[in-house]
Image 1 (cartoon, rainbow, N blue to C red):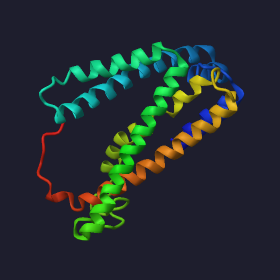
Image 2 (image 1 turned 30 degrees about the vertical axis):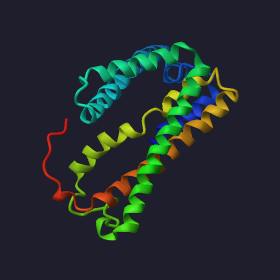
Image 3 (image 1 turned 180 degrees about the horizontal axis):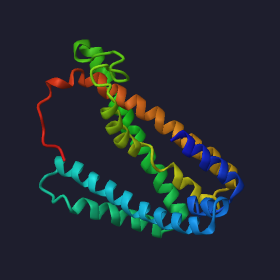
Length: 211
């Protein structure tokens, strides 16, 4: 992820275009490659939001089962489409609001675990197990974890599509790309570590039917 982000960061300083990977591949490799990259990029922007909407719908449906699961993806898509229709400035404001809400939720999550530790330390297992456990540290499980963890770092590439709209141009996009990856990495490590501390021994959980 770092090498990908660094590549985007470097190219955005020299190619000030909102085409992102499409423009980079077209200029640096070949226009035909850029053409194919553009279609692949479009496919990514179609499939990934769909995946997020579906997963979000499944998660909320588990909390509110009385509402059909297919309703939530429609709501997400309607909100996203409506906000983008209002223009880049309104979209940026809405994105900032969502970021603050997400950071607030993560902060509450961490504080609750810290509070639990203060009340009953027996419920929390502080160790390096979230980072390394010889019992589960196998190539197969690592490959499986990477395929899931990668979803937590996607999105920084979309920053390069704002090269023509950002005040600082390519230089601002370059810094924002690397900063986004660093922040995502730090938040991911903190949240996963605290979640592992709180759950302790996962073997005590019953087998579920999660989708």
